Amino acid sequence: MKKIIAISMALLLLAGCSAAPATPADPATQNNNNAAADTSKIKTGLGVITTIKNSTDATDEKDGTVQVDTTMAAVSVDEKGVIVSVTLDVAQTKVPFDKAGTIKADKTAEVPTKKDLGDKYGMKVASKIGKDWHEQAKAFEDWCVGKTLDQVMGLSVVQRDESHPAVPNDPALTSSVTITVDAYQQAISEAIKNAK
Image (cartoon, rainbow, N blue to C red; front, side):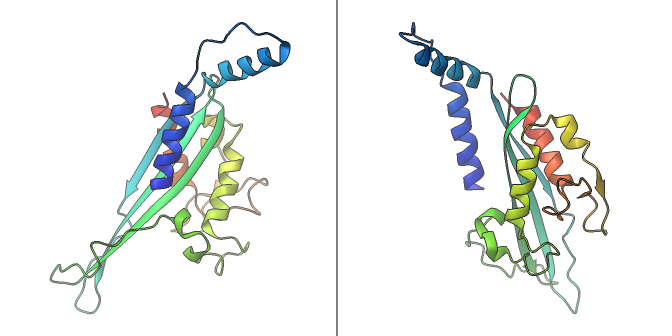
């Protein structure tokens, strides 16, 4: 999450740092000033979607778990609404508790995001394409660049199972993304709506 916030702030600073161009001395300077002027048209936003749908109740036989899934997207778009950059991450916070309601987790522990975990997230072993979460998220981020929100939201998806209701069915993604992308689409939509 710290990385998402840092990246968002850096993008906002870059988008806001434009000075009036000086009179160019030569064509090379003119090109550099035009590039700087173009970046002033970039808007960046942050979208955050939080759910607790994967939480479970405690029973006499088994502890319960509160699971807070926070999906984050930092998105930059140009003046036409075309995505020029997107960064996704998920903080998946699991807090076990017993039937009496006693929390059975270290309340002071830092909770790394899926990107923070990298290969330690451990999805590669179960993945049919041999890619961990961060690799699949990067492939989806790359696919989004150059597209509008309508194109991202209109991505062809299939429901693989109850836990994967929106797996990409686009030939450009089927060999690189087998995770469900509905929460990422929602976060991207929210980020674009918040872009300034």
